[in-house]
Length: 206
Image (tube, rainbow, N blue to C red; front, side):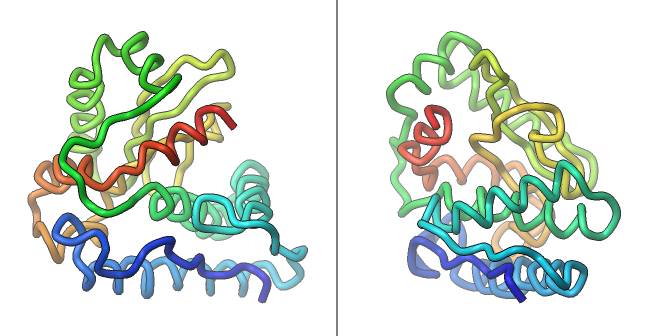
């Protein structure tokens, strides 16, 4: 099997109290591991996926997953999409800090395209809170660098729309139910404390 479960770039309890150690154990250690195992069983002859570290995972693995998401369908698409989404999700966090804000060109683009950081946060949280069922809220950049917010159901990813994914909030219930029960908006509001904006800036500039 060549696809691997990413190693988290922080300890399992590093994101508390925003995301508990128990949620990390289930979300990363059970759900994401399940998608990896499923994909390996569905793709018996994948090419090697080892390379330099990139946002907590392998750069080559990320690129291979993007290729699968763009070219596959059915079960392969669903599992590859979930692995790709989760690698970007888990790789964007760091220890909680209440005043974290975007930096550099990304900060300028947010003000340009949304009016202010606070207006962006409100729009992004609304996208996550109002997505029906399971899925993801995404901040992405189009080919001209304009920032857009999208709602992607189930395992979908913005690359399927020609966008570059930058930031995502997972609104599948397994991402928050242990810590927040059915209070999805509370979960979304808390996530801002653990966003590593240096990571998001690198994705924007890459």
